[in-house]
Image (cartoon, rainbow, N blue to C red; front, side, top):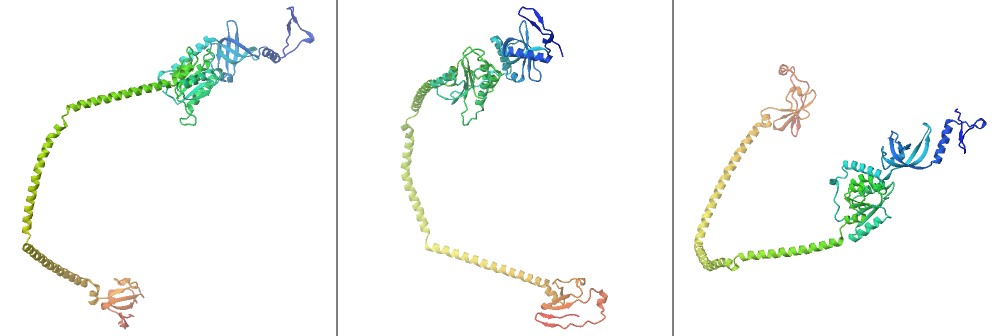
Length: 496
C-alpha cells in the first residue's frame, strides 16, 4: 500500500494539502486506471502531425514508433490488423498525419497514442514516397517498353474500369458512340479512398480472368479512367498493387487517370497513357467515318490502278502483236505444201489400187482345184504317217509296262509269307493275334493259332513253358497225334 497525499491547487494559486480523515488512499493500479480514464475521456480521438522517429516492427506484427517535432516526442503503437491495411510503409524521417486515441501504458508510467490511420503529410512527403516507389518498380522492369503491347486496331469489346456514377464513363461512352460504337463492359470501382487501389487491382485481374469464349465477352482492350484531382485524391492509382496488376495484365491497358498534367504509377505500367478519359476512348477505336472514307479512297485507288494496269497490258500486247508476222504469211508455206500433197495423193491412190489389184490377180491364179487337191493329199499322207508312228510307240510302251508288272508280281510272290508256308513252315499266333517269335513269349495254358499253307488253321494249348534244346530233342513220351476237327476253313485241332 502506497500513501498518496493529494495536493490541490485552488483558485488563489496556493497549494493546499489535505490531511486527516479526508485523506484518500489509492493503489498504484487504481491511480493508473483513473489517469487512463481521464486521458482517454479527454482525448478520445485526436489527429496529430509530426515526423516519424524510431520505427520498430517486432515479430508480433505490431508497429511501434515515435511522432516528434522540434520540441516533443509522442510514443505511438499500431496494432497488427491496422498495420496490414496501411497503404504506405512507415519510415523514419517521413512526415505523417496520424489519427487515433491517447491512452496510458501503466507498465512504464507513460502515455501513448494508439494509431488507427496514418497518411503522409503534405504533397512533399507524398511526392518523396511516390518517387521512391517509382524507382523500385522501375528497377524491377515493370515500366520497360519491351513489356508493353500494341492496342488492337478495332476491338470488339472494351472493358472500362471507373466509377459508374461519374462523368468519366459518360464521356467515354459518348466518344465511342461518335467514333465507332463498340460493346462496352463497365467494372464499377471506387476511384478515391482507402479501398480504391484494391478494387482497381481486382477489376483488372477480373477482366483478365474471363475465358476467351465464355458467356461474358472477354475485352480486347481495357481503360482505367478517372477525372482530375489532387495528389491525395489520385493516390490510389499510385499504390504498388495497382501498378503490378496493370503490368501483369494480358489484355492491353490504357491508363486515363486525371488530367494531362497528372501522372500516376499506373501510367508507367500501362501499355498506353491517355491524357484524359476522352482521349483514351479515341485511342481505343478509330473514327468510323474516317475509316469509311479511307476505304472508299482505297477502293478508288484500286480501281484506277487496275485500269492503268489493264491499259499497260493491252499496250504491251499490241506492241508484241506488231512484232509478229501476219497470219497469211505464216500459213502460206504450209498451205502450199498441203496443196502439193493433195495433188500427189490422187495419183498415189490410183497407183496403189492398180498394184494391189495385180497382186490379187496373181494370188487368185494360183488357187486352182488341182493345187488344192495336191496339198490335201500331201497333208493326208503326213497325218497317216504320224498316226502309225504313235500306234507303234504306244504298243512298245504297253509291252514294257506289262513286263515290269510281271517281274514285280513274281517278286511279291517270292516275298509273300504264303510262299514260306508252302515250303513246310507254320505261322504261330497268340491269343491276341500277334506272331510268336520266341518260346518264352508263350504262356502256359494259353491258346495258340497255328496257320499252315492253304489258309488252314490248327488250334493248340501250351502245356509247359520253354524247354532246353536237349530235352526238346529227346522226349520221354511220344506225343499223341491230335485228331483234327472238321471245319469249314481248313482243320482245327488241339494238342494235349
